[in-house]
Amino acid sequence: MFEQAFKNIDDVLWKEAGCTTELDYTEQTSWLLFLKYLDDLEQDKSIDAALNGKKYTHILDKPYRWESWAAPKGKDGKLDHNKAQTGDDLRDFVNGKLFPYLHSFKQKASGPNTIEYKIGEIFGEIKNKIQSGYNLREIIDHIDELHFRSQKEKHELSHLYEAKIKNMGNAGRNGGEYYTPRPLIRAIVQVVKPKIGDKIYDGAVGSAGFLCESFEYLTAKPGLTTKDAKTLQERTFYGKEKKSLAYVIAIMNMILHGIDAPNIIHTNTLTENLADIQEKDRVDVVMANPPFGGKERKEVQQNFPIRTGETAFLFLQHFIKMLKAGGRGGVVIKNTFLSNTDNASVSLRKLLLESCNLYTVLDCPGGTFQGAGVKTVVLFFEKGAPTRKIWYYQLDLGRNLGKTNPLNDDDLAEFVKLQKAFADSPKSWSVDAKTINKETFDLSVKHPNGGEEVKHRTPEKILDEIAALDAESAEVLASIKALL
Image (cartoon, rainbow, N blue to C red; front, top):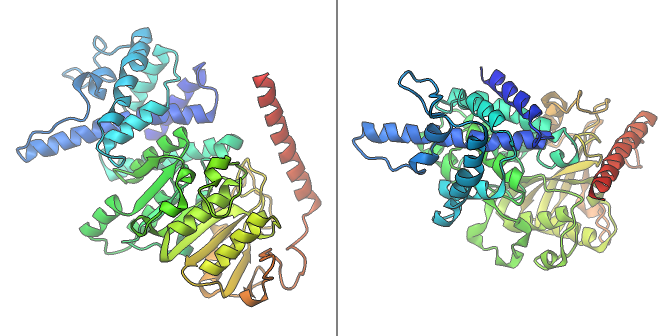
């Protein structure tokens, strides 16, 4: 039923002039889903309060509750068409009254981790792009079919929402910023092994894939107590996100996975000065896929000891600083980080090797990230002791990855298994830190039996990469023409 509702919503959005991309579809579905979730939450709390003989104070004033403006019901439980607005009246109410009212919650909120703050933040950042009030009415009617009452319902909705995020990630370069392949995330979680009681952090949270998969990993453990469940809900998962759409998606994704009040702050993580991070701010686990290829302004670079415009390199410094002694990290980064000869890259590798035990490097194939032609590696490290030995694993799948043939869990099973014992294999080997050049700190993926960078690209792979670059170039040219 839920799957059909999601399909129906997309069908209506496809007809809507204000929504032209998968990003728009996900954004517009998200704010409506959030308000329906909020209504279900308020109804549950109101019933609980009544059963305990208490009075419940609603978060939203009556005219702005879902049951009032979106889906007023008659005594028969069906939509009251006399009270339900549609057309221009509905659109004007949403744009002129509902959104400004919800945005005002940011000023009322007592702190960034309250539901009031999240309401104000979400509705101050995104806009209603559904221009036809008749399309909006149709979508609202489909959203009203969805319910967030039981864990089973949330679980089913979370899978549908993840599929929507994945489609958005496959939709082009911009979408890829929001989506890290879930099989890769699950493998990183299995290697880092977060525990109940750990503070788990992602300062470039995107769609909150790392936090959601960590929650799934920890809740699957046997013997979970009520105290453990409370710890997981309130004091485990923390994130920061700069982009408005990603912030909304992260909140909604965590809610659907069962984290009722996500500790996600809407901010540019890199504007925080590293010198201001104190022990109380530090965390046990960092798992993240920071944006690569971005360029940060000079004033942002001033916050870091190793100054560089490369966004991912600034994030790596931030993550190292955020970890407690003994804290563990699993961070995705461009593979050129391992061998770049510029001063910032060399200094950052030196910092990583001297302040952390870089114990594993996973070399990912091209095409791991849909819509992004760059090759990546995952760095696994523990803070507080220098690196002694690095175990490398080259994920050579023998096939080209693409939208119709993406990375899957089986692809990473051998890596996870061999990593436990740092075992040598045709795809894995270890390097003693003493053999690393102390001037360049070069960490290139070089197989000891191959000498050269592991495996030359096949003609097919070269042609695939050329085609991908051509497509990206065409996209950029189209964007430039649109601006002219």
